[in-house]
Image 1: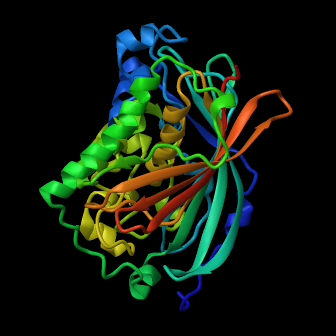
Image 2 (image 1 turned 90 degrees about the vertical axis):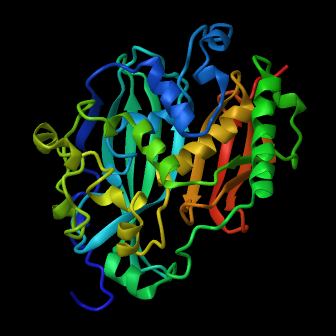
Length: 388
């Protein structure tokens, strides 16, 4: 391959052409929601506590808004990873979400219609020429109700150039936390949890929210291989036999030989399923095995971009309460969560308005950093709140 050339010539053959949808083999279950809330570090009683949920506006457990991505077969990345880019790898670059009102409950069936959207190539300090590719995921329930749209951005790059340029080469060791620092972290985490408990079934009124006011801080971490594994296993598609998998030709997309494998392969799942679920082999194993993380330019085990998006949606939803909802959120990921780091989320109300549909909206600017202040993600979101 030519030096520092990223061949994206095949991508134009796929833009705008729908690809095979992913669908579940069984309806959603309350334990799917509980597992998800636990794995995303989101102790909102509405999504896991039977008694609390029974007294809510829904009268039963309801899925977090962030759960939509868990009903796909690949974090929403499928339509943003079509076409051949030789000797490439992929990380998440962002997600834009639109929510249309319908909620997800036990017994629902969700189908995702996937359409590649567009791409652009830019030069980056991480890997030189880099492809930012987008694709749409349209989530419908069994009644045909449009639940949500996710426009996912992937970052596709040559793994050898990322290793050669070594932008993260000096960040291989986990930070060491003292017992005092860990206690301080846990105390900070509980402040956000306590905020949700105090709101309970109450309403956070649009009238009472002031522009320039700050949302409570949300803290997650320190992250670990164990916590990333727990996140991975909360996506139902990672469990053997759960999903009607259209299958992906990972080698045909250009993934390097040692990272391609049989992830999400419906044929291999019946023969040797350990080769297919992404934890041990294939493109996803870099998250859980530092040896493979370093082969694609990452210094150590790192978290999932789709989980970062879920953390942001949960952050906003937990603040809005059960009578509010996120209607739109555009998140840009600048760097992953690494093992040993913590994640700190902050938000500021920047605008209040009533939209053309008569909804009372607050716009929130969010930032996600690690404990050193390095920015991991930014987001702008519109949240609907009830009016007095």
